[in-house]
Length: 223
Image (cartoon, rainbow, N blue to C red; front, side):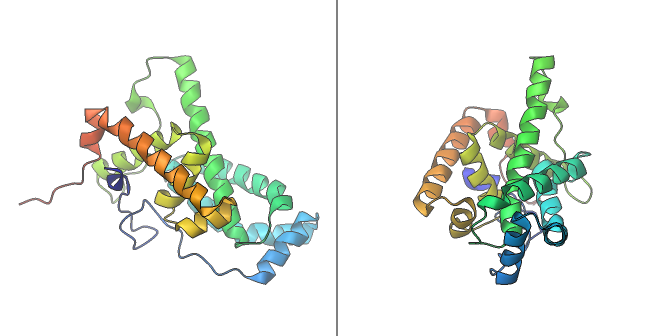
C-alpha cells in the first residue's frame, strides 16, 4: 500500500518509485565544504558564492514539496536559504552543502504547508479538502496523478516532524537510507525506525479512508 505513494514523476528522475529527485547524490567536494565553513564564519563573499551554489537545488526541492503551481515557491525558497545560512554553524561537512540545504528546504516547505492548513482550520473547521491548496499544476500530467501527489503531501503533514522529514527525503527526493542518515545526522537504524513508523501511520490513515485508498491505487492501462 505504501509503495503506491511513490508516484512516478520523470520531471526530475528516471526512478519510477519516487515523487521526484534532484539528480544523483553528489560526491562530497571538499572545496564546497570549505566554502560552507568559511561562510559560517561570516565571510560575505563566501556566503554569496555558497547561495549561488545551492539556490537552484533549494528552489527545485521547494517546488517538489509544495507543487509547481504554488505561488509561494520563491518566498519559501528565500526562507529556506536564510535558514540554511543560519544553520551553517552546525554543518559538519559530511555531505555536500547543497544536500544539507535540501534537507532544510524540505523542513521549511513542510512547515509552510502546515501553517496554511492550520490557518484554514482556524478560519473554518469544516474546510472542504478541495479548497486546501494542493500547489500542483496539471500541465502535461493527468489530473489524477497530480491529485495523488497532493494527497501524499497532505498525508505527510499529519506525521510527526522527524518522521515526515525522513519519509519526504526518502520518497519525494528519492534519497537512499544512507543519504538520509548522513544528511540528517541520525543513525541509519533511527532513520529506518522513523520510516517504519511513518509508513505504518500512513497505511492506517489510508486504509481507514476508502476514498484515499481508491485515489492512491495505480492507474490501470486501458484494454
